[in-house]
Length: 489
Image (cartoon, rainbow, N blue to C red; front, side):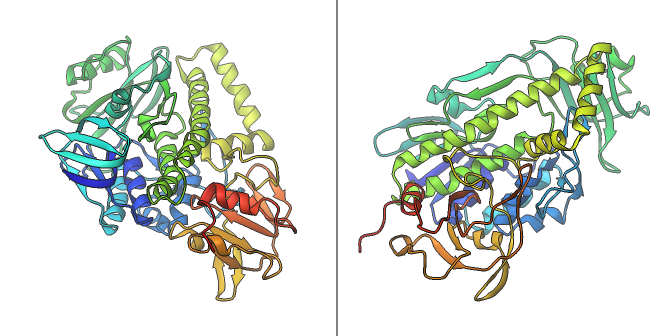
């Protein structure tokens, strides 16, 4: 039986990002992926929000994505655009880039880090004991791991086999989505009528037509067919435009569900395996990638026995509220988008007017872009629990960006005060101490300007775990909480 420290079920964006984070930390990780290659049929999700671009920038790989996509103001709420061009971040925009390209670039990253991928296989079951998990694969092969992470989508076998409840709300609307060829020129663009939302578009010259149409009835659990798509189009448009040769056909609904726990023993969940919702606002892929970056360094420290297993409980504590908020805002958007009537239109107009005001725009844009995420790490400076700004600081080695210090996914104690005032000798094997100068303003999205700190302890995921004060109160506790007990003298 082949052994790995961590086995990840699912090689989509979340699984690939998690594998890269673990490999960067020196953990023996492997992916099990049912597809025989990384090729993804269909366009699926279509972009990255600002915080996800920042996360990729923290690892020095954002340019790989930016050079292949289209920078744009993509944040919005129920089709009401939210401009973030005045937000204090290098990436005050989103990126239009189809999931097939996002996955290809992440797969290249994983390949550079020499992560093995068991392709053409699926996890069929697992058995957990006190020291690890035996993972059964299709084809009769088995793997052994200390931990198993389910990144295997909304129908997650890992979640079901672990017996983790997937609570939430049943669907109220259903859509078919497909890429097909047509024999007649369709009615291009978006239609929002009494039946629901529909659209026909061609993504690129020479590519199939992308179709999205609202179904008239709920409840079908079978795989959608070309005939289903034809009937749905005829019901809305009076014709199916001679659709044929589908590349793919799928169904999605506004079902909103979330795992009640992201961890059960040695089994963890991330991405769609942990939360599903209506795709309004393009949030799903983004919070999945951010799940991976939150979990990766924590799981690596537990595997290496740097930190106790209880550190993994902070993954659920921090990420579960983030997805719960996404589920709520997605349901609110569905209420504004579904089958319009005069009252819904009046409500949309009111929301549009509200979000045209500066403070509401910033609040909602911060939420939709992920730039306002705040982990509850206790009372203190506004930076505590929030993403560190990517400032231009000056060190003994010259000027650099703060995100550069996170490229290797190591924690950083950034000292901006008097030299020699911070002693982290007992953690120096894992935490970088960097003396730097910065004389500019500190500003956070949504909150605005904040007081300049004398030092900040930054976790590998880019969130601030401690903010300095003259007497270093709480620094040793923060170091121990997040990066393990002090080394013996």
